[in-house]
Length: 327
Ligand SMILES: [Zn+2]
Image (cartoon, rainbow, N blue to C red; front, side):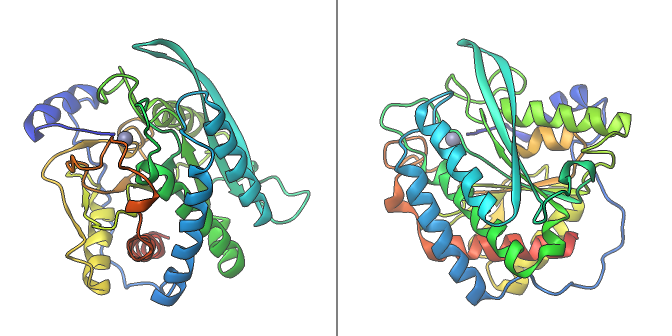
């Protein structure tokens, strides 16, 4: 991650890619009454402890560069943990043409299926929660906050939904994107990076267009988590955030008193939400930490040391609040 473009520059590109439409799919539904929260601050603190331990475990496997042993072990770990809590996972494998030639990738996709004999892929889902599981090809780079912490958080949320909100779990698809990171210096849309989210978005779009499972109906929303556990938490959502999610983000940060840690970027950001918005047409928000932090972003300093349970707890509360309002 990530390349931030000047707004005008990317807008002209997006206009080409999206047929002169606004990059942000808009939802015209009127504001509705706030819905009950899916978790208290105390619950979020407990989930943050679990998310931290999952992050630590994932980092113990080493880096997660394309097709590496660390990436394979991380995916196995995610699948095993989710299975304990009633989630079934499938791998969506593909080859992508990258600036370094063809590379093998696979997204991990999970749906809630606590009872045997039930096929979770026969139904549609309402919302998508996603994070990228790969780490950038850099020497001595583990990617603790970019984005093992987001993967660990999704595992903790999957357990929480299983134990306390199984009806919500049935409406959710969890996606762990491979190949978010560019193999070269930075992400360039449809040239380098976002390989997993582009492949996934095309599959969703195709399935919805043909009205066949598992996306007979298009998911209504997506939430992408990326760099959400830094001790100096500074989330800045991109300017291409769809309106309904922007509304819920603003309401959540005010309700929770998190304005200091959850702000706004001045430009469009190329991250996994981007293909979900412009290719799959799933309105998707990206809760993303400020990556203009040279002291750690894409350096060997992105280790467990910079991850804070308090930051994870805040990000979890925001995620649950937005999720609750979108459902
Ligand atoms: Zn990155």
